[in-house]
Image (cartoon, rainbow, N blue to C red; front, side, top):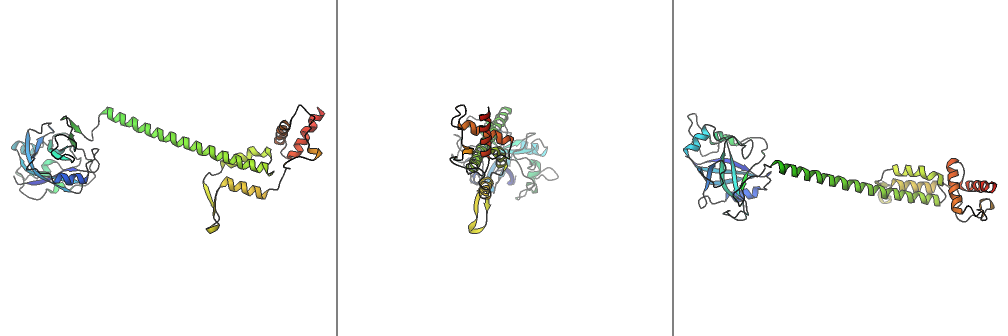
Length: 326
């Protein structure tokens, strides 16, 4: 028969990682020194032979095989659609039987019956080899028009390991699929857990910073203790992202809570005295052994929550009067 060329493999999406560069090396394979056969199916011993390949040609991510001979049985089987598709088998670069160690090497081209083709969507063999109306092979040097097809194929190729075991690279067992699914689910859960932990850390840091800002306002006498709880809710509800205030050389960056705290510090006058208390009206009753300064402060704070209009000094005075009258 006249030597003809058909597409046999595409790189790019294979789990075995065969690349366009690898196919270029396969195209340089010496088929005269190491004959490459065409087989029925994918026999582990590469026989019985259904024909031979004269060489290969790579074009980008596509590998073409130059068909040199086909047995009469192979021709009749292809013509009668007994052999519908084809699939390349390769030697792995580390396979002991590989004639070109360190590189992918062609092993044989398998003729497939009802099995899925090596590349789904590739033209059937009968169409790719181009039979004429009488059932004979067309004697043309050009590839058949059927080699041009659209769509994005999903490469499936076959390899043999060093123990002569056939491996379908993109076909996985139910156990392998289940294991990979579980592994993926575990990885996703780990990522979700890490994200949750990170968010919790950011939230805790943000709220701690807000607590310090509000404590500073209380210490400065700008915010009453009775107002801390509500102000904390407001601060914690604000955006955590850093904001830009101003423009050009005067632009500054700050969080909304820090900016608000600064504004309140400037806008609000001192509302309660700070530091040592010298006024007799606000002196703690040192003779009252049943209630120390901390207890009085706590009682005053509670009273301010009941009567928000009270200043801290007025609340302390009211607490002391109650204690004196008791």
